Image 1: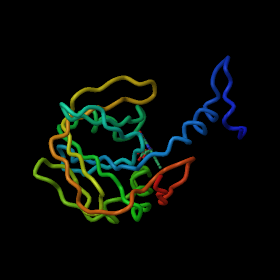
Image 2 (image 1 turned 60 degrees about the vertical axis):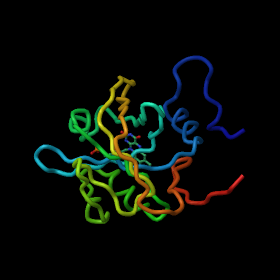
Image 3 (image 1 turned 60 degrees about the horizontal axis):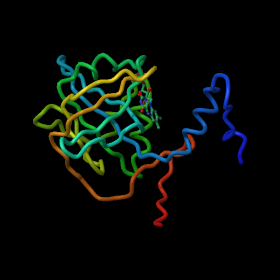
Length: 171
Ligand SMILES: Cc1cc2nc3c(=O)[nH]c(=O)nc-3n(C[C@H](O)[C@H](O)[C@H](O)COP(=O)(O)O)c2cc1C
């Protein structure tokens, strides 16, 4: 077993060990977007996206309490979750940087509901806020999906052990 997999069973959990072990759960990558009342477009890269409920249709992501966009997303009237394709690594990187200009490298439209929707996304969930839950140093944002689209087909961008991957091995 690799050294990073041996988390302690007593005492405080080493955050680095927790991070490394958690990183073995492969995820997709999404950019959550919104437009502020002042008209500014915001986007944040997340890998904490998941579906929650079919009826009603609910999805979630968790947002760092210290994120610069925390206030905007926790008070947003609507937001979109853009699921990235394998050729969108630069998009993911751009929206993971403070004040990074992802908009310049990401063709997009603003939907009727006022959410930036990426032309190159594999899937887009437009959401209105459903509930927020305190989750330690993150807030868990649950949204009700009001529109779900699949702008194009392709392979997903994946994240595993702290690195981007794009290979799908079918079982
Ligand atoms: C692969 C990846 C996944 C991420 N997932 C999350 C996430 O689920 N929640 C979150 O709050 N930040 C996540 N981040 C970090 C944010 O993208 C980053 O902190 C944010 O864009 C910059 O925030 P700042 O303006 O507060 O510095 C992730 C970053 C990367 C590269």
